[in-house]
Length: 304
Ligand code: MG
Image (cartoon, rainbow, N blue to C red; front, side, top):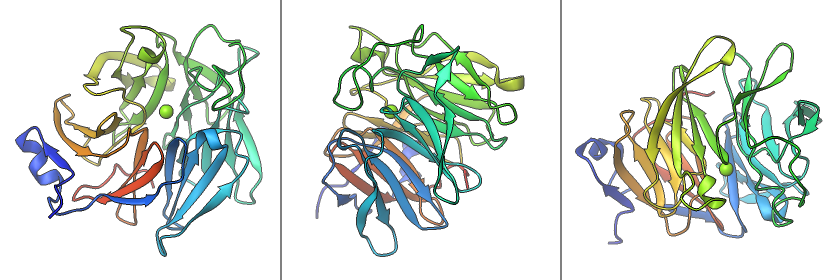
């Protein structure tokens, strides 16, 4: 009997996993897997193989993996909006795009204050149609996962794109390297990771929490959790407001009160994850070279 992939750190985690559930490796040919996004209508998962400049598609019905888009402009984070459209961050294009129903790309954001963005990293869409994304420098730091270039912005900011005017407004400017982001199930809170430790010794390796006010104004509620293994990159919330986040040794599960209650151990560094499947109870995990999945007794927050 193989060892369980689950680690219980708090009794609250007991009912959040099935001890016999297996972590399946669905694909292992990536250089850096990121940005999983689940399409319920197609029953497929699209994710980025960022340094390989391509996006891949896992077909949940027959288990096959194929190339979805290549080149992908070094795509990174992806999400699905409420109309079922793919929204992507591109390091290479230094922009956020949306793939329309007819396949054409619409540029959602590529500049702020008249200057080029750094390299959008991760993106979420709120039910009001506003699009929120982070803009660290990873895609312009070198040619590894984008194109080396100087930053034109005053820092690495978090932005909100207004659903009516399309205006790209900065909502937070005090991050070192903002990274993954996600809303609470009722969309009253926004969580944003800071992976600034990659760029400064003793830099941040945590997730911050914000209350969302009128017009998207953020009120800082402080640090939600400090990472105990590597860095928090991308993450998602379940329907009861727990945070399931990437870390160096797998997926960490945090109660809404900020307690680390359990882990899913993954044999590679995890960069991002998302809930999928028709019931949003399949956890898809992007771990360095591989795509993994594990079936859960919890459901992801409703985003479709
Ligand atoms: Mg990221």
